[in-house]
Length: 124
Ligand code: FES
Image (cartoon, rainbow, N blue to C red; front, side):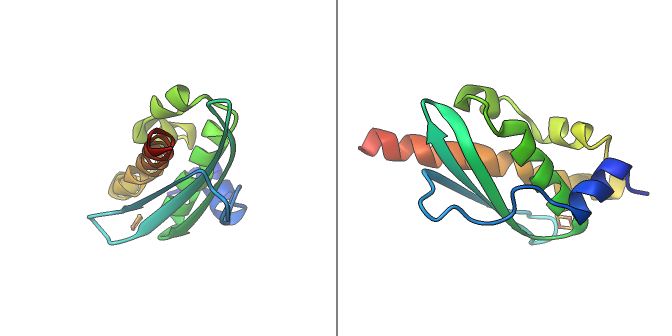
């Protein structure tokens, strides 16, 4: 039912954890199931220098979190903002239809973390 990529990222999630001195933090909750995802960013020269995540959710949510961290690491903030939840699900070779809502968190959490970073920069 799950693709090999989903199983791989679920069993060996990349970039799990927390960045204590993060430049931006994004937290989103899934309205469908109540699961929560938190993304921490370190930003240097407008690029994502480091990214970590903590997800309290199902296997598909953990796999999408892990995949999105790999997709955005090293990208500029604008490039990362263009990554969609759908693109993350596609990078995992898809999710079962009843688990598609689990991919609603990943890109959203990254986008929120970027907004958080930009709000802090503007505030000085
Ligand atoms: Fe909640 Fe998958 S069941 S994110």
